[in-house]
Image (cartoon, rainbow, N blue to C red; front, top):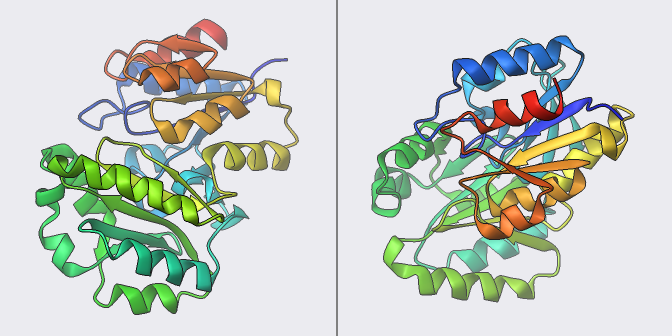
Length: 275
């Protein structure tokens, strides 16, 4: 079957290290769209945190957000699929993660929020300038986060934890401890974070939900990624493509490997296998 949907992780995959969408890649995506292929961003970010250079592309209608917790029809501004925490689950997870010395945020109704104190000190946890800028530009400082989480009424999509670089042992310990909660799944997209979703929310489940909605078979779906949180999506697609800059575990989960995100790897693979 021919490819009818291409799902694309953003950071480390579609976008370059300095968060650009290159001219070559844009041209290839435009050509694919002209053939009736759905171009779908698939990200750990909330819908409001989608990179505008991607969100505003005229051919981008659907988006898989917060690691598959919410699949959006951007044109109609409505959710096609939602897999979120219940109120009690959200409260339990927040109280647990608050016991760790980390920077925490919660994605609630499409908006990522964190305590103002953390917002003021993002660089302490994210010394990389491009990453700290991304966090700052996509988070809303919100005082009294616990109350906000508890009062959210079944709309918490994801929790993020960011550990200081020198506290890798704490990150490993927290990940192991989170296994006590049977209703969640834990992934990571960068070296010092943990991303906590409802167990039914993965990029793979989001991709499958969108494919079902569009009446597409698995063989008609292609997916690109570089991070641990992309593995489920690479496996759910008929063709999973890992970036050269991906870790070995991600590459082992893919059907093929393309060049890095700084070498137009996405464009190369689409030209080779689709166009």
